Length: 253
Image 1: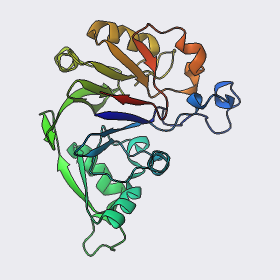
Image 2 (image 1 turned 90 degrees about the vertical axis):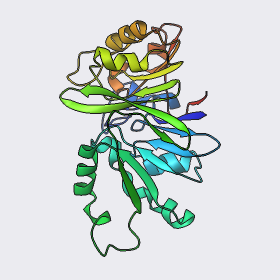
Image 3 (image 1 turned 30 degrees about the vertical axis):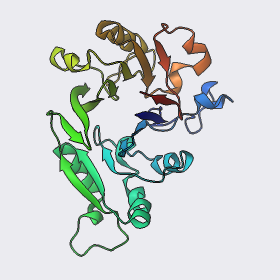
């Protein structure tokens, strides 16, 4: 299975509009971060986790030719706003795209993309099939996926374990029962927004402490803001088994 980090930034992206800071004016492409998302590909399917505002850019940059499913972590706009750009896959491949998410996520999507679900809808609208998920594991073409409940301040969010690869974004709390679902993973991706405390995201210190507790051998940090610092400088502070992810990074599992 190949994992591509489509985006590794927080809700504003990096650079931030009108920001004069050093990171936002960096010439290192690893400091240019679009909204957080990943893509998983194996011989049977292509899956994207979250369709943020940069979804179109992601698909073009990676030259994606097919898409089977989208799995949503939660309903915030930086994770769903690119949904309308599923249309080219509908048109060119003549198929619906399968969407997986919690009921609250689909309630929000139905409200914000109401035209997709109206009777007598225009044929140019996205064609999707909704599959409601909870905390029970499910399979997509033989790939076992285990949802993991995490908290984003007061909002329940899902992380996901795909075999031995676990992806968690937009979290600042994981209870002990859900941590057990992560243990034994070979690769963990975890959000780390910045160094200073935040109401709904792990800080760098909190993320590193959790990584040490969970004991996963290979770890990547994502959902990073410009306040974290530059990729080069901040990477020097990380343990050997932890790296900052960056847009376009690819892993083979």
